[in-house]
Amino acid sequence: MRTDKTSRPKARLPRGLRDRGPAEIAAERRMLETIRQVYESWGFEPLETPALEYTDALGKFLPDLDRPNEGVFSLKDDDGQWLSLRYDLTAPLARYVAENFQNLPKPFRRYQVGQVWRNEKPGPGRYREFTQFDADTIGSASPAADAELLMMTCDALEALGLKRGEYVVKMNSRRLVDAVLEAANIEPSKRGVVLRAVDKLDRLGVDGVRSLLGKGRKDESGDFTRGADLASDQIELVLAFIQPSISAVSSRFDATWDVAFGASSTDIGEQGQAEIRDAVQIARKCGYSGDQILYDPAVIRGLEYYTGPVFEAQLTFPVANEAGETIIFGSVAGGGRYDDLVARFTGQQVPATGISIGVSRLLSAVRQRSDAALSPLVIVLTMDDSAGSFAMARELREAGLRAEAYVGTRKFGDQLKYADKRGAAIAVIEGADERAAKKVTLKDLKRGAELSKAIESREQWLGERQAQATVDRERLVQEVSAMLKRGRW
Image (tube, rainbow, N blue to C red; front, side, top):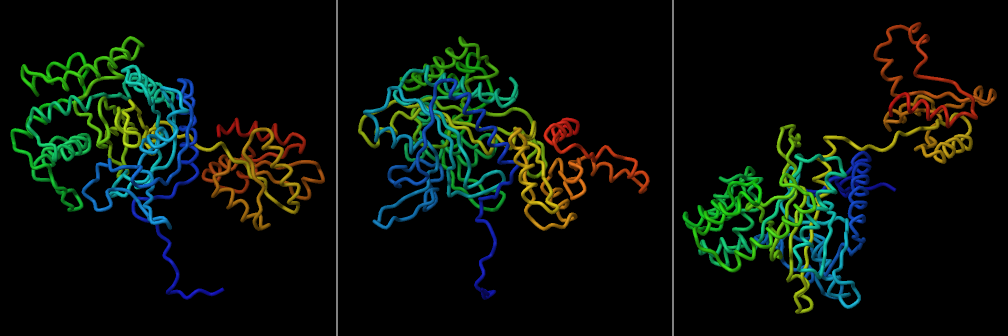
C-alpha cells in the first residue's frame, strides 16, 4: 500500500526520552540482579505497582511545582477521572499500604524496581523516563529502620564493585532544616522554594544556590528560574548552615548548630539532631565507618513529603560526562522518612522510611569502571541446511553458550557482514564438504579482524591459521568453548 509522503510520520523521539541498546540493557540487568540479591539478603521482599495511578493518589510533592502540569504526565480516563504516570515508587507504595493495611505485617518491608516518569525540563544526563530501585520500611518509627537502609545501601554499592572511599551515604534531618528556616524567620510560603534551591547545591554550587535564594537564576539555555526572594541576612544564615558539606557527624554537629543558632536551640532542632545521632550510632556499632555513613547539612532532598531524616548516596570518584569532561558524579540514591504519606488516605499517621537508587544514573558511572556486556555470541552460518544450523545452535545453547542460527540471505559474504555487525565472537560454518567429512569450521572473528590489519600478502594469510580451525562435528561444543577461552571473550 502506498502512503502519501506528506502524511508520513517523522521518525523521532520526544525530548528527554531515549532508546537503549543491548550492552546497556545487559549491564542494567546484572546491576538490578546484584541489588536484588542484597535487598533480599536483608529480608526485603518484592512488590510491583502499576505505572498509572489516580492523580490525586499520587499527590503533589514534586519539586517542579512552578510548571502548570506540576511535573507529571497525565490523561483523563473515559469516566472523567485524571490518571498520571507515577513520578516515583514511594507515592504508589503509600496507596498500596493504605489499601491493604489490615493484612500487612508491621513493619512492612518491600523493594521495588520500575520505570518512573517526570514531565520536567530535560538536560544532559536528565531524562523524563528513568529506572528506580527502592527499598522501604512502613510501620516503624525506630531510628534502626533508617540505619538499616543506610547500611544496606552501602552493601549494595560495594556488591556492585565500589570500594570504600569511592562512595559515601550522607544523612540530614528535615526537622533540623525546619529549625534553621525558623531561626532565619523564613515564612512558610517560601520554604518549599528554599528547600528546592538548597537541594541543587551539588549541581549549581554555592553561587547558584545563593541566586535561587535571592531574586532567581538564569540557566545556560537562557531560562529564568524565580528565586525565594529572601533578604541577604536570611540567605547567609541558610548558606552558613549548609557549608561546608562532607563532614563526620561527631565533628560537624556542634559547629553547624552554633553557626545557625548561636547558643539557642528548639525542640524540633533537638529532635532532628537526635534522629541523626541515633541512626549513625547504630551504623557505627555495626561496623560502618565515618567514610561510609556521615552527617551532611547540605542534604535536603527536593520532594516535599519528607518529615524527618533524609539520605543521599554519592559517588566520590571522577568519571567522564557526556561531553567527555572529568567530573565528580555526585548523587546516585536518595530517600528519607515520610511519616505523613499514608495518612493522606487513612487519616492515621503511619511511620515510614525508604531509599531509592537511581539505576540509570548509577549505571552510567559504574560502567565506566567495569562494563558488563552480554556473553559472547556464536553465530551458526546457514550454507544449505537451515535445520542443521538450528541443531548446532541448540547444542551450543544447551551447553550454556549464547548462539543463534542465521536466518537471512544464503550469500556467504552477507552472513559474515551480519556476524561482524552483531559483534559475534565465532562463526560456525558447515558446507557440503564439511558435512560429508563430519567436520565444521570455526572462525574466530575477533582474531581474524586483528590479523587482517597486520597481514600484507596472500601467502602470509594462508600461513596464518590461528583465526580459523576445522574440527570434528561431534566436538563442536568443546572446540567452541576452547576458542572462546583462548580469545578471552
